[in-house]
Amino acid sequence: SMQTASSNDCIREDLFSPAGGSQGSDAGERARMLTTSDRLIKGNERLKNAHSVTLEMEGMAASILNDLSKQRETLMRSKSTLSYATQQLDVSRRVVQAMARRAATNKAVLYLIIALIGGVLLLTAWSHT
Image (cartoon, rainbow, N blue to C red; front, top):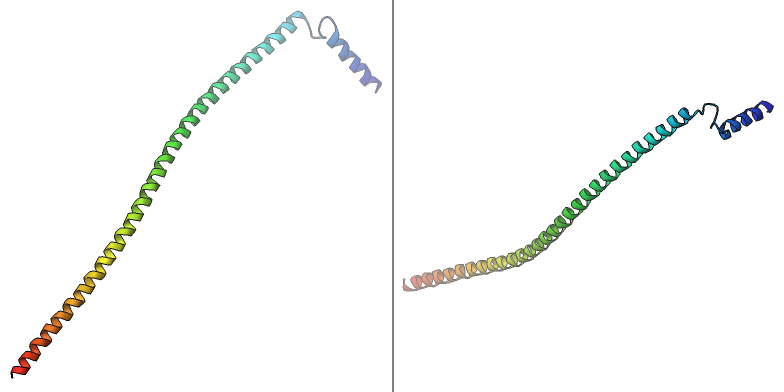
C-alpha cells in the first residue's frame, strides 16, 4: 500500500514535471505530437471518405426510391386497367350467355315448327288416303 502510494506519486511527478515526464525530452514530445497529428489526419481522411460514401449511397437510395415510386404508379394504373377490363369481360360474358339462351330458344322453336309442319304433312297425307 505504501509502495503503491509512492509509485502514484512518481507517476504524478513525471506527468506534471516541466520536462513532461521521465521520457519527455523535447524530441520525444515532438515525436508524440507528430504521431498524434498523423493519426488525426488519417482519421479525418477516413471520416471524409466515409462521408462521401454516405452521400453517394444517399443519392443512390433517393434514385431507387424515385424508381420505385414510378413503378408503383405504373402498377396502380395497370391494376385500374385490369379492373376495368375485368368489368367489361363480365358484361361481355353476360351478353354472350343471353345470346346463347336466345339461340337455344330459337333452335327449340325451329324444331317445334318443323315437327308441326311434319305433323300437318302426315295428317294431310293420311287424310287423303
